[in-house]
Length: 460
Image (cartoon, rainbow, N blue to C red; front, side):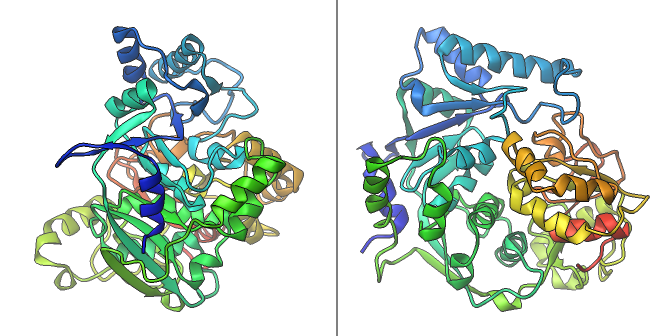
């Protein structure tokens, strides 16, 4: 009896080092401008080519601006990063979706939407949120720059086999509860280290009922509880999403692939190293109050009191509240907001914009709020326009920006000023993550929309 993880891993083992790591074959390698320059420099120094160039795809996302993309990038460091990626793509003959390319977007958004991401694959990228692609029933994980070079040179990587965990979400989530709320609830219960050393399979009725976009959000946040990655067994939802996409199999190849994909599930009776079950009906819309994604509470709940915190975590808890300007026992609901960010590889897909737009329709953006609405790709932006969502957003006082990682992290122009509060649909709320001194409050698209309209944290 084998788990889904075991089946995919075992099918990709090239060799095993005695008492050491596994040499794992990689099906798809994704690269962006931040973690790849030294890897390509390493290839040049050793006189090596990219071993299997058709299995590597590049895009610029972290450093690019989300306004005036038709003009040169103003920040010299960002411009150099992107220009270096341009040169590396050209020199090594790689598929590259650069600035102003209609296929450009965040690496973890364009992989699935183009059909690069498929069930049963091993997928890596020099980016921790590569776990997003696990939503398709793939082993997908982030790697370091030296490992990027390893994959470019050999299409293989040395990895220690992780343990397996299954997290079941049983039952039906309540009203206004989405995948982001499920993820933040899960991390608040397990803590940011609760899945360290494990690869997680998500299962249960609530997971089976999630759309592909929502499954991607859930898998995206696996890394925030220390997991190596997360995955969901592929099913009809997966296959319907993939069919007809640009790089998905076609015709007879589709039928052959489908026959294989339908076998990708954990065997009945397969044993996991750890198993956890949550009652989805107990989950309410969530929000964070601190400086890691595990510091989350229901939006109508209260920040914990100091005596509710484990002794080992009290110092970091107090420091976190001091940074955020909050106090134990306070309610989050009603706290004023300065910025709202909709976007990132966590919540920058079309469904996220539909949810946000559905709430703000017929309402107006609060005057005290600066809102950055950033599609995860040009394809998402085109779909927003095709569905008329951009017009509804404009009528409510919102401006749609151009694709990019944007305010998820302070590597481009979209930085939250020091001391300001931002309700963000991104994945991390570390000190300075969105800009030096920025105060980040993580939430899903619906809670973000309510904050943008009401100017304060509001139950949707």
